[in-house]
Amino acid sequence: MPRFQGFSAQEKQRMEIIINASKYCIHKAQDEAFSDYREFIRRAHKYFDLRNVAGGHEAGTHLIMKTVSSMRLMIDSDTYHIIKGGDQGNTNADMSTVIGFHRAKFAGDKKQVAVQARTQGTMMYAGRTINAYEARLLSYGQKGSAPMHFYKGFFELSGKLNDKQSQVETFLHELSHGAGATEDVDAPSCYGWQGVEYCKRNGTSTVNAENYGFFLQSYLFS
Image 1 (cartoon, rainbow, N blue to C red):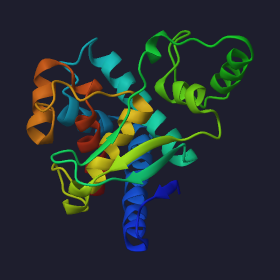
Image 2: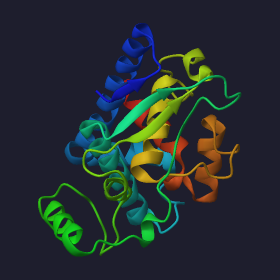
Image 3: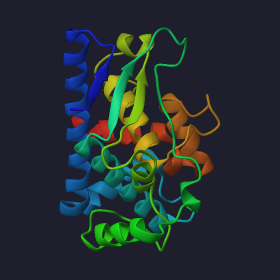
Image 4: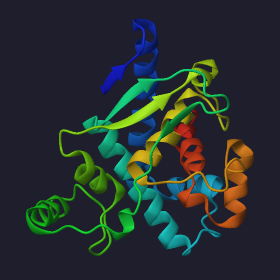
C-alpha cells in the first residue's frame, strides 16, 4: 500500500478497499486484453469509440493499453502517496500530470537503465520517447513518490457505480493522470458520463482521464 497522510484509521481502511478494487480493475483489463481480445475491443469501443480516436483504431488501442500498463506499474510499485485535503468545492481529487514527457529522452546511465527495462518488457514505448511512468521515475527516483490528493467531496461519493462517478472511478481517473499523463479535456465538459461521450465525439477519448476511469471501473460489473 502507498503512504497515507492525514487520514483517520477508518478513512485509511476505506481507501485501502478503493485501492484494491482499482487494482483488480487494472489487472482484469490487462488479462482481458490478452485472453479475450474481442471483448476488450468491444469494451474499448463503448468507452473510447476507437473508430473516432485521433490517429485511428490501431493507435488508439495501443495508447489505451500503454496507459493501463503504466497505471499497473504505478499502483503495483506504490510509486505514489495519498494526502487528505479539506473542502475544495467541486474538486474531489487531483494528481498532477507529467508535463513535457513527450520531449523527454534518456541519456548516460539512465539511458542504459531504460534500455534494460524495455528489453525485459517492463515498459511499453515507441521509439526513443519515454512514457509517463518512466518520466515519474526520472522526476522522483526509484524510491520516490508522486502525490495524489483527495478532498471532502470524494468521501461523499459512493464506493462504486456502473457508468457513474464514484470513489473507485475517481481514484482510477487520478491514477491515469499520474501514470499515463492523461488530461481533463476542455474541463468541465469532460466529467461524468456526459464527459465520456463528449470526448468520444471529438476524438480525444484516449487522452481524457474520465474515459479511463469509467472504462476500468466497468470491470467491477462484468
